[in-house]
Image 1 (cartoon, helix red, strand yellow):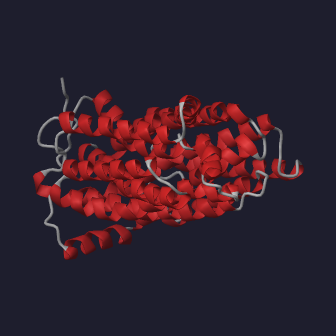
Image 2 (cartoon, rainbow, N blue to C red):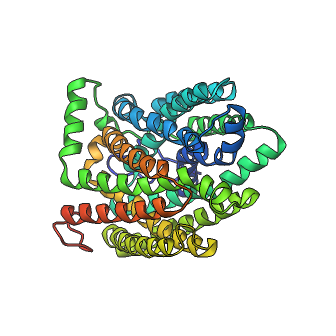
Length: 416
């Protein structure tokens, strides 16, 4: 049984019921998280197989994927606005599958990096299309609520991803991790094909033209609210990228040496992020996107400052429980910002949701990958680069928000 959740710009026939819709969207975008996090336990075996001398170089398996993920988003959005959401998503999943097969048979670290880049090119489609489909079907705070539920399930993926990667490594080798993601991508494609209608309303379907695409891009980047919150989202995304890039070295090997316990710690922190997304979903319609995201940002900045002071006191290696709790608090607050920043960035651009989602995705992802990569590559055997990076990113985001809102924090200047 299906239930329509359409707005005036929504699909012409009903989409799946709420639970199925959210689960499918979360699983679709979850391919991105799974493609990153379940590979983390394999960093050591991959480095050993390909004789990678510098452990920081293995982080490139994350950042190369994300670069491909970032740049291709600009293609999928305009195509989705012209040809519809469904065929473009299928094309992206096919590219993802090709990259995954390349990774399975990669015979050198360089070839594996190329495969990861191709994977990222394909994974950009789920990111763009999930945002566009959700924007097709929901408005305002209801869209933020749906996005929070999607993000809640999406963030559950990292809870289990490193553990699943470790289990696969125990049963086989790291190539089988890519086999598992290939199977999942095929399942997602079949589910979409059978259950999801085309959600792009006919009146919002655009002819594919460079002039129209340029106009829509210009509309996106010149909208004060969209540009500002896209920048804020990118800076917050950098927090996640810096953490993911450094987590294996911090917890598993070089700082705390947890070994096989790394997936458990990583999963507990990710679980806190999932709880935060659930809290956001429950509160956003009552409290509003502005108050929740800005409150979370202020706590993130305060927590990051405390974490940095503690790290300096302990010469960069604070006790694991202290660091774990501090990091969990900041990432809990991170999950109060991202869904709301994304919804605020997309809110004024419903008529060009596909292209807007692409532009916002490229821009925010590149900011996140570049800034997060800089912090990750600064890893020096301590947690100081990570916590100092969080404080810097938090302050920059707060400044951006203050500029967007003209100094009036906790006030819904733009919210209808």
